[in-house]
Length: 391
Ligand code: PMP
Image (tube, rainbow, N blue to C red; front, side, top):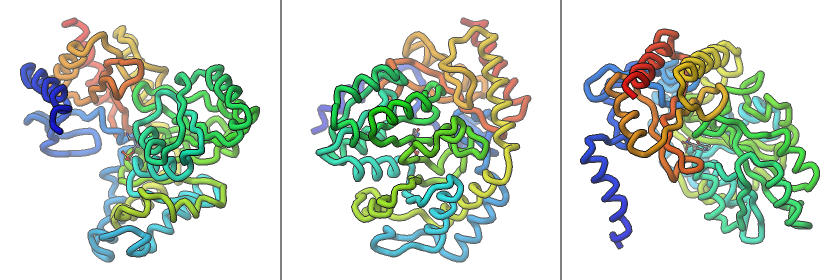
C-alpha cells in the first residue's frame, strides 16, 4: 500500500538535502494581512490570496465575535441533518442579491462548492468540457459524479468550438466549465468568446470566480460582470476564502433546479455546515465589498505597481497586470532557490510547480493585496531586484 509514496518520499528527501521546504511553511506569528513572522524573521506576505486584506477588518472580527458568543463555536453537523442556522440562509439570499440571481447555495469550502456542484450536475450520461487549466476541485467534482469529461486547450476558442461541433446533438446538454481569473498565471478567461460558442451550440456554462470575486467588475462580482455576460452564465461558483477573508464556497444561479442540488449533492449533505462565526464574518465582508470600490481600486493600483516593477527588472511574467503575478522560471532548482532567497530577504510568495501549474511551468507566484502599502510593494520589488543582480 505504501509503495506509491516512494516517489513523494524521494522528492521530500531532495528538498531536505537542499534545506528548503516550501510546502511546510510555519507562520509563527501573523501580524496583519500583509505581515507575519516566518523563521523568526519579520516577513512581508505576498502569497496569501488576501486580495482585499479583510482578515483583520474590525467589523468582520466584531461580527464573528458576536456570532461566536451567541451561537457557539460550531454547527456540529450538516444542514440536512442538524438544520440551518439563520445566518446560512441569510448569506445565501445576500449572495443571490449581490449577483442579481434567483438563488444560491452555500457550501463549507470553495473546494466543496465545485465538488458539490459538478458531481451533482453531471452524471455518467453527461459530458463536461473543461478548460485545460481548471482547478483540481473541478476535475475532482467531475470524477465524483462520474461524468464524461473532455478538455479543451486553455482559452483556445477554436478548440472549444471544434469539440462542441463534434459533440453534435449532445452539445446542447454539455456543461462547459472555465474560471474567471486563473489562479496560477493570473490570466483571465476569454469569456465573451466562450459565451458566443455556447450561444451557437447550446449547452450550459459554469464559471469559477474564486479569484475574481471582489476583484473584477463594477460591483466586484467577477469577470462575468466585468465583461457584461452575467446573463449567459448558468452557474457562478466562488469561495469566501480569498477576497472575503473567511472560509466557505457558493454557487449562484437563475435555474430553479438549483435548490434540488442540495438534496443530492454529497459534499453538501455529508459534511458539517460553516460555523456561525464563519458565516457572520463572510456576511460582513460581503457587505463591505458591496459598499464601495475603494479596496478594489487600491488592489489594482498595487497590482499594476508590482507588475510594472517586475517587468522593468526583466522578469518573464505569466500575464498582463492582475492581483496574481507569476514570475516564470526555467527549472525546478532555480525556482526552489529563488523562492528561498526571497524568503531570506523577508518576502513570502508561493512556489508553484507541476502538476499544479499549466504547461509544467515553475512559478514564483505573488498575490497582491489592497492592504499592501506602497512601501511594501516597493520592498517586494527591491528583493526581486537584488536577486536579479545576483543572477
Ligand atoms: N477554485 C479555484 C479556482 C481555486 O483556486 C480554489 C482554491 N485555491 C478553490 C476553488 C477552492 O477554494 P477553497 O480554498 O476556498 O476551498
